[in-house]
Figure 1 (cartoon, rainbow, N blue to C red):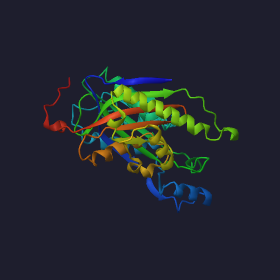
Figure 2 (spheres, rainbow, N blue to C red):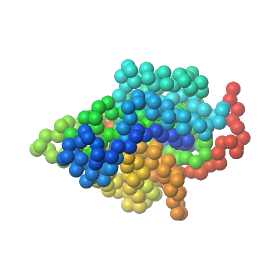
Figure 3 (cartoon, rainbow, N blue to C red):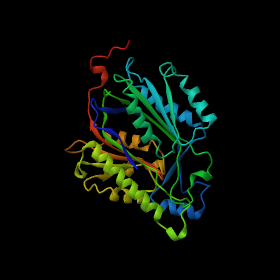
Figure 4 (cartoon, one colour):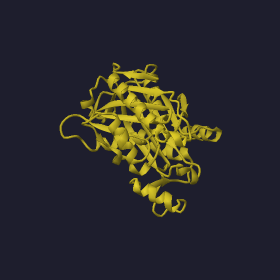
Length: 327
């Protein structure tokens, strides 16, 4: 089932003021918790580092939020907060709430939490934030996504093909751009795939084929919602699996002129829902030679995929424009 979540709304929706916090880089070649076989497979996939922290996940989120809010003038702050995470148990939810209480500008705001899964969370958070702008048409919504792997054993997936890193990211989703950012052109989501885990031997490759089918459907629906042709897409950003699998995803979407930008977040490894925000930020620093950047971003894993077509926009910083009055 594919659902269109955003279809060229007016006024447009913007993503601006990106902030990030990454755990400390650890060389995979020297990490003691990998077996020799796991290490060889990870290195063969092009992964060199993993990001690891001993701090709580909300500490990383706090750092990302501080970076996001640093460039936002008074009177232009968010009206709500959407947090996406891989899991939300009592301790984690209380930790986030306690962290947000330390910010006078954020403490009184309504808070929404999403825990569909770590990979799909940021795509869902972004679409929810876009919908919330109907309630706050003149303001913005703070999107925060954070993922923390609890044990070293959890970092390695059973296929030994990819690893998870500790990281957090945040950005503002707004009607009015606050400096450079991206305009959301169209967004779609594909759900309810019937995938068995683990995969039976007699169906080897079935799960990957089904995921590629879902990614293709999601990408097509996102482009349709954006009114964009395949040749209009300049960059492809994905958040799932190892570089070789991202190449399969890129090829499946049939966007011949789009560059695969897996190098923009290589240190995050596998399945972090905020790495596309990091890639978008780095894409801003890598301006195209001619046409504006129009990336297709794909978040997801297994049963849920979100696709978004965005367009790079350059705006003067809000401090150079007439401030919006806040009652």
